[in-house]
Image (cartoon, rainbow, N blue to C red):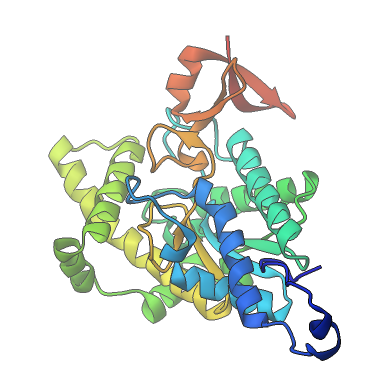
Length: 329
């Protein structure tokens, strides 16, 4: 059989005895990388949804994939995310992973299995839980983040999701106090606030990210006693901190896993250094399982909604004695 991703050779009598040229592994790897990227494209979380994106529009990711393929190694992808549940009880069912995380992790594991059918060494996704990086800025206690992260790891094992691994601050800085861990990562990797403010003024993607995070912080702040305008000012200030820490976490991940293909749960434009990935269906492209609740529709669809909205449309389902999701009535 011809190498995967290449056209079959035309065999002539002369070729049988005289053609001793080795396969062009670079071309083979590039062609297979394009096929692998083609598996990701239907799940792309795009900042430019109107753009008809094709594999050739992602040269960095193609080169990274081809590097693993040419070396005959498993493809490694990193995904910062799965930090902790929102502190807003109107959006989520509690502080532990539920059906949203289970479905999302199952999807990611299945995506790796699909890649494995094209590239025999397979693929792995490293879930880089970033909750502790900015837990103090989003008002989620560290013990809730620990409980969420530990339950996520247990869920991966229980569901038999063999293509997934987890990575968090404990893997990097051990048992140091979390405030000290955050300070160390911030000091080493975070951009300055002044640099970010300049980018917000001049870069559409950074402005979109800043606005999205500000909106989430405003929605997730519970018990604020000041005025609405004071809350918005406070959330705008914290948004800069969240972006600083998020970028610092991304730089730390890149340092520890320099060859990995970088995924993102945030919308990304074609050609960016990170590939945006959509985990589950939602009306808002910014919605994640940790900011929402799953509603199982009668037609089989699963959708992410605010918990209070899902409660109006369905009945609560328990799993292992804990709230898991809603099912349409």
